[in-house]
Length: 506
Image (cartoon, rainbow, N blue to C red; front, side):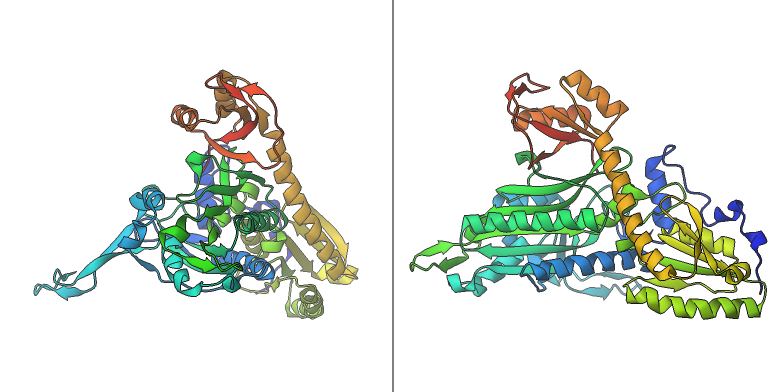
């Protein structure tokens, strides 16, 4: 099969591959779902509330996992694995924890199936478990029960453990990546000899998450503390990173929790300190999940499909040959064979798509939809002129570039694209952080501009809950870098010492 440039019209860029994506402005929710499905990231499963993560989507998760895993190891943590099943009795040991997760738990009650004689498979009622098992919604209870046998002395501390795993939370309303009954995540669980050590660990891991979000995901985040109403069940303090999506809704991208001694006391995890005194240890937990892929989609993508920051793109550069005959293809392939090792030497992932089953226009649309940051097109005339055509996904700009030094140019271009995607997201966020000084102004902003709203709050859970019930907006966080200022609560009129960030959220 041979190709010529007559296929390379703008119309072909939006072939059947990318048609059918709903406009963001028309229906943001459907736009998101269309991208997830059409970009081949995930699919719905016949299992209620669960998803199938397809290879392209999973490869993004693997890149996230690889970067985060190294960051955890660089900060002294080791990976381990704990059981999927947790005895029900463990949950009753920490009252606020069980209350926080009770409505989301999947419960295993039997361990055997049988044939009923009529060809049907049914649960064997005689095979009932002595104690029901909870499919883990989070692992604090099973891990702290285990730590009891691992920690005796101050010499065993700090204990810095991370687990890569799946968890199950029986969500009633689900959305691919953002909220599913089963999802993938990592959860860190650490034990310390002092409160101060544990708080420092909590803050350190929040910084790790913020660094990953901003420098790899190109996602600007606000670091802050959760209010008591929004705090993790069983924590004394919850820190978070909050991001803003392109529809003006917030998304919690990661959390880090100071657990105090709650779980240590519940599971009797003690150590002998340097003075020979027996004390309970201090604890933290922290985690991010495949929800980050949802954040990546919603923060950067457009009506043509995914826009991926180069650092997390499974394919950073795709090269498409455009040829009229086998001699043309051979000439182009010889050049590409020399270029690819130079790109790989810079750590750049590259794909040479010389399939003869699809036309160049189809390929262009496919890689645009999948968010590949840089596309290189090379034709016979390019080989004669010593040039290539480069298209960047973030701006859709195209330019003709010299073949000489192309590897260096592409490396610099990828860095520029990463920075530009971050800048675009940050500019959007800065334009959508607005102060409100009255409840009416607050409600108007929610309905007309959305985004983060900085407003005074009287500090009471009751006021926070009333605002949530009336507007569906929650306090996303109390920013760590907040400036103190005297004011009055927008709802109650009572005194306030600082503004907090409200938003409607995922």
